[in-house]
Structure formats: C-alpha cells, structure tokens
Length: 389
Picture 1: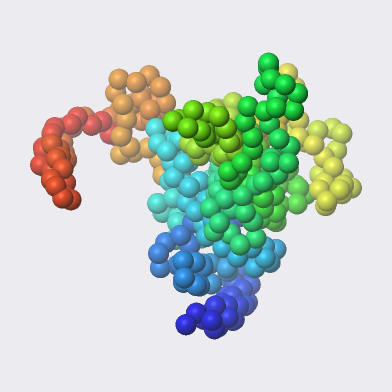
Picture 2: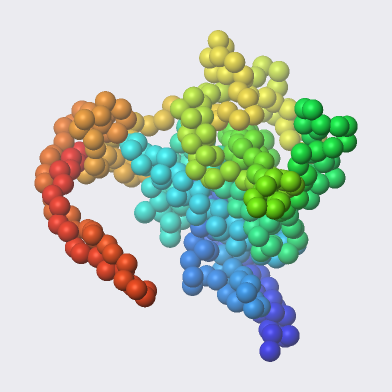
C-alpha cells in the first residue's frame, strides 16, 4: 500500500518547492531575521503530511522560507525539519517564559503569520536580539540531538562514541576494573551541534559587525547546550543491587539552558570592532572575516564563548512604537509588591497602574472515579490584578 506513496509524494514535494522558490524570488523585500524561524509554523497539524506508517513530513510550503543550503541539508537528513520545527517552537516558548515579567516579553502574537516572527526588534543589534539568536540556535541543537536518539531522523542515531572510551577506574579498585560502563543511548549532541551550525548559521558570513554578532550568539546558544550534558546511570543486579551500572550522556532540560542564557542576557557584553581587524579585511579560513569583537568599554574583559554580545542599547519598551515594532506596556499586568522588573513602578514606567478585582472560575476538588473518569467542581474565586495605565 505504501510502496509507491513515498516516491509520488516526494516528486510532488519537489515540484511544489521549486514553484514556491521561484515565486519567492519574485517577492520584493526580505523578512527580518532568518527566514528559517518561520519553521515554527510548520509544527502545526495542518502542516504535517504522512510519508509512511509512523513517519511525518513537513508541508512543502514551508520550504520557501529556507535557503538553498538549508534545503539540501533537509534532503540529506529525512525527518530533520520536524525536529527543527519543534526546536523553533521550543525557542519561542522558552523566550516568552524567561521574559514574561519584563517590559519586552518576546511576543510573537502579531508577527507569527506575517513577514516577521519576533518583529522589528531584530533589526536592532540590542540585547533582546542577542537572546533571540542564542535561544533559537540552542533549541535547534537540543531538538535535533534528542530526535537522533529517539530515532526520528534517518541519518543519525544514538551517540555510541563514549562506549569505546570506557569508564574511569574508581579509587580502591584494581587496574582495569570499573564500577560502571558506558551503555544505553546517549543523546547525539555531536550531530545536533554540527547540524545547528550548518543550518542556523547559513547566510551569516561574518562580513559585517552585525553578522559577527549573530554568529557569536548562535555559537553561545549551542555551547550552553553542550556544556549542560550530564551523565545518567542505571543499576542492574539482583534485588536492586548495583552489581553493574550502565551510564550514558543525556541532554539537559531545556529550561536549564534558557535560565543560563537569561543570566548571560543580564550580563551581556557590548562590543565593537577591534583595532586588529577591519570590516573590509581579508577573508580567513572557512570564508570568515578576520576582524574580532572587543568590549565597547576598554575596562571590560573580552566576551567568552558562552557570553552574549550586542552592539547598541535596548529601547525602553515603555511606549508603543509601530516603527520599531514595540507594543509598549500599557495594559500589562504587574506586581504591586515587587521592587524588581515585574513591579508596577518599573513595568509601568512611572505612569501608574489600575487595580481591579475579578472573578476567576477554576476547576477544583477533583476526584477520580473508577473507572476511568475525573470529576471536578467549578469554584469561583476573587483575584486582585494590577494593570499598567
């Protein structure tokens, strides 16, 4: 039943892709930020097509947002675009969580189905843009590495490279005897890291200061994922004893990566071009340009691999500015007891705030009834909320 279906569908996809690409070239202007960010839309059910039993493919319409090299990578790695789509959505959710109490809250509400994803803020080389590039690069690395170990990408599997190295010799054991051994299925961070670099960095050649900033922040996102890989073990033996212990490397929860990048956002480095290089300098290895980034403040240390870098101060984000894509903080909820960034004084930019009492209907007193139903009551509670004027 499925013998000819994948081939026919593949031919239809290629034909549709070529048509979309040609039409895309005729469209004047270029959307802000990398076009692959629009892969976030590809994860919606209507954009997933059945390729074979248990396998899904991305609707060909989303290929129009990819560059030639990215389309080639997708062809060479069947199933990879589903992982990229998951990563793009994961990045959006994490960004919005990390900035839920900030003036800029990483909103994509008005941009997801238009030209932009994160809006016009990515036109500016500020801290927020640095975080966006880092979190999206990290999410692709994380999602692809996890998908490899789950078997949903045909060109990669679990990472078995550790097993050839063996485990350490614990103190007090004879030479060559280990208290544990490599096994299981390690998440393939090597494949995820390499693919993210090739896919995400496409189009960023480092020819300008802004491109250099983007490349640095992309790499910082990947570095944070790799640095948080952790060893996980399982004991084997009679009655729960740990006669044999098998260990493997596991990806961190993505929230850990988001927390770390948020810390780097708060301590991001403003940079400029070093005197040792020039924006028009000769190209070095792998097509990169030889100028380097140095701190804007000469008293600060040079940015490290995991640091986020930016070029210009961030807007205030207080007032609505359609030209800059800023929604402002009018109507945003705030915490009247906090003196932090989520407090009403800072969130409302000194304009004041409105206090009102609302009635919230929630499920409560839930009980399980055999078999198999959960019944809940509806409870009404009064809550006091504060919104910026």
